[in-house]
Length: 332
Image (tube, rainbow, N blue to C red; front, side, top):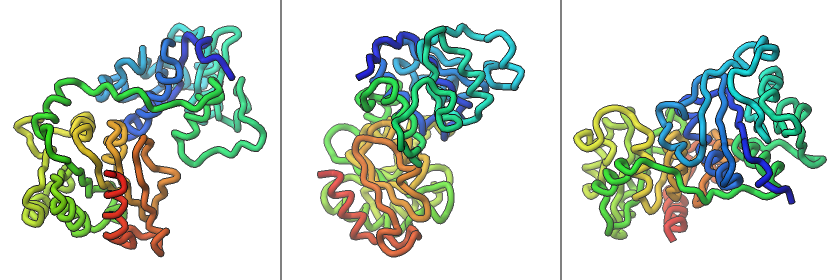
């Protein structure tokens, strides 16, 4: 088995992250720190990354430095120019696939260091997978595979996300200890990813009948549905709409903080499912034409329901009874 302790300085090379990418990759950051608990881990991007600004607090203790917008792979000429940051890393993990950028990133490694990259089927990589390796469809699984190649063992998700204490306290004020809170996230980026709202309401009513408190996570696109949900489920709570407590504007860390108060959540295939997964919220996630195999959030407690298993790759195919059963299984 490889000795992970020999990697004292680690660079992760990425093309950059907007908010969706940044939230999606948070389990990878947690796995990195678990695999290399004592190393210096730097994130290096030729473009912008939300790890340097919008969700920078979430990298505390996971990353040591974030180098954004650095000319390492901005242009092909970067191959021949002096490095703009100190190199000499014991291992450089390349998470993108553009070969000329990989060549730029390889310059960051120390003499005798290792470059680990899946670009061009690991052609540039100093560590390669075993013969017969099939690249997984899920991007995070590919990243976890690279950690395993470097260390000899599968990384764990045993590092909690470092959510800001003030957000956690606000979430606790909204959802105090005592009741079992069950989340419902009925939104999605496109209409065909949305399980019918009336079915979310039906499952929420069943949860309320069992003595639990339904908590609806509604974004701006779903806010107009609040009156109908409240009328159908009078005991439901809507924490995201408490602007007096949270202020205006979207903040993914707020949703994550709320997620830490939930015993479980039912969600469509959406950005919210990845936010809650990052906070280790147990999840049931519904998929229609998309695939859990490729897009499923990485979390320790999850159940994925695929519409094709119920007859057709259309999300309306998933029946209420199957969802209710899965949610009860998750909570048990």
